[in-house]
Image (cartoon, one colour):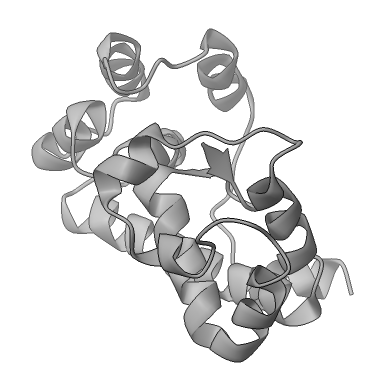
Length: 172
């Protein structure tokens, strides 16, 4: 399953959900108790459980997420988590010598799928800055079935690493 503003997957989604829960546990529980399932406990489920977890739009859990993220506090918590998460990804990439902006964008996308495996690990461990090499690794990664349009979009667009503060200044 993937969800949230950055379409986190698996354990990354769980980590975001834990952050939201820890921001306001009482409100989280208040919303969760309206729905069936262990919606308070799932924030502590294992990474392997989250990697395999799926939901449908008709599921109680799906409706819970809709209500949860329609609240101002949970939405703000998710944005705060996104900033911390992306800062961590950028710091991780840069600390391993990855500085090419397009490669960092692809690295960030890969990181959402599998933080410490496959192409993500190869790019990090080898400090890869050649976007085409990073694309080849993504295409070959069994954990990241990279849609070709994702790579094409990154390759053909110009990007600038920005902050939420700069976005807010441009879109008050």
